[in-house]
Amino acid sequence: MTKLPENLELDRYGLHVRLVREEDAEFIVKLRNDPQKARYISVTSKSVDDQIRWIKSYKERECEGKDYYFIYSYQGQLAGVNRIYEIEDNHFIHGSWVFGDNIPPYCALAAGIIALELAYDTLGLDVEIDTAGIHKDNHGVLQYIRALGAEFTGTKIYPMGEFYTSQLSKELFYKNKNKIIRLFPKKIL
Image 1 (cartoon, rainbow, N blue to C red):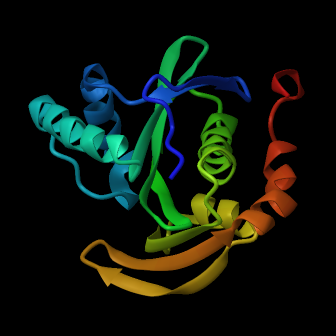
Image 2: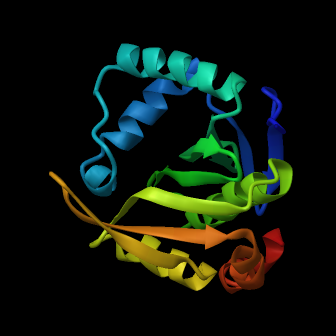
Image 3: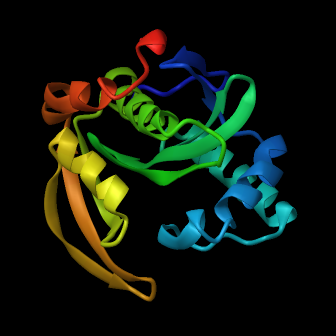
């Protein structure tokens, strides 16, 4: 099984990306507990110490090649996070995708593309199977994955509401990713 290096750092589409570290805990807690941004993601403790403990357990999964949690910077400022996780055989889930304010909107889109490129190209995975789902009111993410060619496979009901499950093959991602990339500023391409 191919794994990402623990010192992964990339500059792509105007963003700097690396793997999350314990010192990122305060930023993550603040970001994931913003009421507007957190409405479609799982609840996160407001405790930085809890987040550090979570990152320590995540790092074990990272070492096993089962979970990668990325942090993105834009022009030297921490901007957002996302993950590829539950990596098994040839599939994975992409999620935990949250970006801060005062960051150009394209950055969140670019982070999604980067995570999927890492999953499909570097890790050699074939399909994203989102069994966790996307909240039915999260219109931006639903539009994004539709543009990439994802197929909706069902629904799940959680206390937070109804979520749509989906899957996106490597082939459809590469067939459609330019629909998203053409929205990026020309200067970063």
